[in-house]
Length: 593
Image 1 (tube, rainbow, N blue to C red):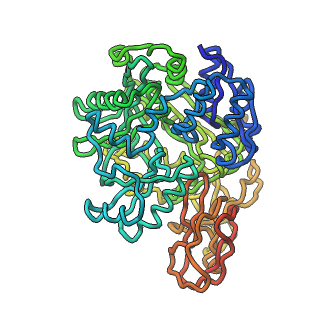
Image 2 (cartoon, rainbow, N blue to C red):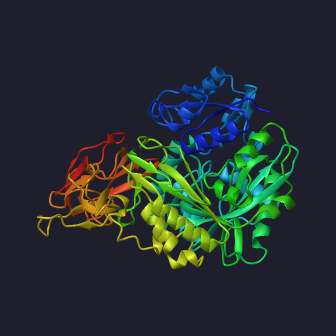
Image 3 (cartoon, rainbow, N blue to C red):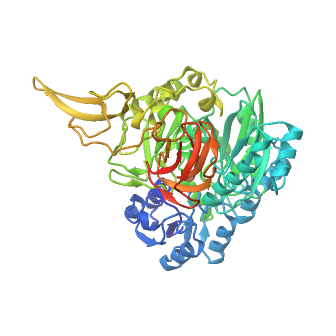
């Protein structure tokens, strides 16, 4: 058995691995950036080593720094978590060359499956149907245009070495290919350290269904469960569930068998996920994620299998603890996972909302689990993923699981940053979701989030004493009162500016107009940053005439690119930022008059 595991990651997944290792009697080593010095995963680990730097490139994907920490700690194994180095075969080889066990698939399998292009070829070799697309990296925007013109629009430009919707851009028009390709490459480079992309057909109303599998070094592979991950925005998942509901008879088993064949075709072992898209009764291989998925807990909840434990056992050379028949017999009930992201869902915009978590109180009760890398007082940094935590519930039926998820979300308290909770509740309560009539496009094209406003979904209303032409966001505050000796917990929607209403005022946030993606006062034409981040592209020049809604800059925050638009038509009279600048929420980026 392994004795000491270094977790080359941070946040929730690092905490998850530390806890699993501890239960197996294995000591753990955390690594951390300057910003994560006091993070939960650092506090929980038996040892911790500094990587230096703040950004991911300076720390968690700084190969030399991570390898030095492995050497200095004396770890005999490395768990990469998800993201960062988890699908990087070069990193895996470097670890193995040190005589240290890499808790993941063999680099040869990662070479084929982590690269989305070669994984398509492997899937074909294993007999799985694939989405029409290229089998080589896209070398130019013209290649992508040729593909779209021949096969039809829209098309998806995707990071070849990525996952989770990072580095993916959907293009509806040939004229947009150049910017979309450049944006996809920037995101891919930032999040995965590589910028190769490829292109494939983009289906119009698909469901995202995936298969969790695990293999051992003796060549045994079992599939654990199916999962539906169709509730997405910006191609990133919001809600996942297992098993995938509403599939025709035999489709789940066929997907499971196809996933196992694809894994065996590349000699795969460890945990992995084969993703499919399902539409009109047909399913197509999409890609394989050669790592643990964020949504792995829903498979655990319906099978009582600890997937991180299985990863560690397999890495140590042990056989899979269960056969396929035993796994099949273990499935029961239904599980739903809700990702709680630090994003402001006001008017359906899902803008990153970094900052300190002033209060975090997870829900509890039968069938409820909350996985997080944060506690009250910790901070969500603009430099990393914005996942606050994952709420996972189990029920003996899907209906019970949905009801339990809604109840748990109502109980969950996250203060200090805006979160996706209001949007999550809107999804769970919607009849389309409950009837399994949603798709990967449904959140953005059908779900109406226009009435969500302000932090934590607060409505926007007039402040007492204000004129009709001046409104400001309202925020939800909690206080306790006693009436005739009886205690009441009261929640109130109050103006965002400081007021004595039983709780300190929330941090001031800049106002935003609906649909603009920009803060700023309409009268002055100032274009403000709606969140802190880094300018990756300036789209206009001084003296240029723009229409209302025209893009002014592209701002990256929490590994996502956001186009910040003008709120009024006019002439750009001033540009206050340049590519590479770091800005804060409310900073003026440009002036349109």
